Length: 477
Image 1: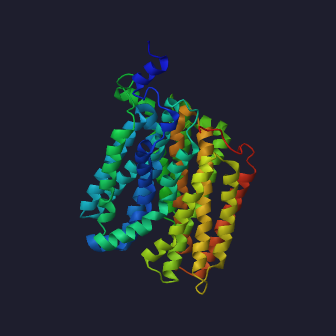
Image 2: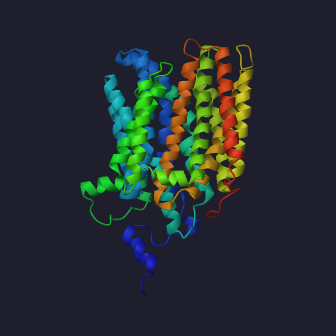
């Protein structure tokens, strides 16, 4: 009997010819994607408890080790959409595996480092490598759904991806504290190596190959299809902007001017690009997608203000250790994970997005209750609200993104969602740096609360007034 057209197409692309829908998203397929996606958020906070031991270990001032946090944020903010674009051109599985290799190399290099420069290089490689996971996972999930004859993947799969890629951010603090206490500061870098090996082997075994490229790509054609000029312009503009934010409260206006000039030049370049990295016309026309990016960035701004600001306050005012403060924030992770799963499974959009804004406003107002004499349990109650913020915002906005982004640009669009999240997290460090510039105090934490209330009101308006948000989207069962 002749093979079906679908079978011929699947053979040409290296995909499974016919994946039964009930087995398409088994634990074997999703496990490496979830592990890979968790590496970036966990690494973003994992090193926090190791900064002081690192300073003592390699003989540098503690202030210089903050560059290790900055390095991963900068690399991740730039690499997320870049990896998505590369996956659209070269194949999602190839880019995913390349990222896992970079994570392993970065873990070895950082773990063996004897100086700050080598440590920074290791952290940059970890940032670049871990950034490949989420946008490529989104593409691999969409491809798997198509192979199974589903219009969209089950909501639970996207929920699992969000749990691993967003809700795990605060896990790095307690994990890092345990590792540093038991094995020393190098363990927070070396731990990436066995995890990378497991993810690499699982991907080779359980994720279908991309199949051969249509034809070998020469250097100039590859640069054109990837839009190398656009990627370089985006990286330079983002670096200038993020450095301006990181250096606050010292205001370096020239960095902001340079960033504005670079963004302007990037827009002009992308309007003429054959295959734009940052599709300016699409973003301008698709305002619903742009609002999704804005909502996600604002929600994560508030979440990271809690992670950074409240952590500094409980350590500086209430006298908790870094490990204790990390454990205090652990319920936030658990709540966000519990929220993401059922919301994503039902493919809900509008309700969760509005609920995230309301929870953000309530939680922000709750920070006003904190004081040196207040019940320490209030910190847990407040962070539980922000667990709801992360859960509702991650699930609702990702589901919206999947429906709003053009199928052929899903990788880049997914990466940009994460970039907006990182801009929010970096802006939060600027907020806490400005407020706690001279000292950590009750007055400072209350000022942070009012700033968060203002941000929450903007988030609430952007959510409630967006009439393009559907109640839910249709997805595969």
